[in-house]
Length: 105
Image (cartoon, rainbow, N blue to C red; front, top):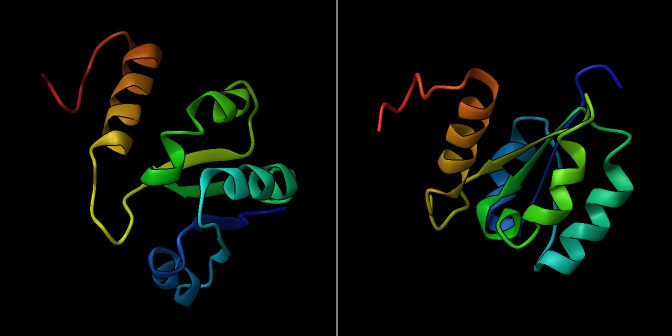
């Protein structure tokens, strides 16, 4: 499992990742994405999830927060960023450090 990465998202959004050698799993909705995450969670250390799927799956993906792997990261889709991934990063930093060192807002 050393360094294996995957992305779950709509077909157009995952194309760039696939071209870079990241395992790509197309999912047209959050139900399909949840099934894929369940299936690949033990095989991949880092899983990128597009923001449109990450938001409705937030409660489901919290189960991975207590585990070392996989790390689930929210990334913008082809439609652009909704700010959700940035907010998740900000919240995680504040929980870990007790202060917002990057965003200062």
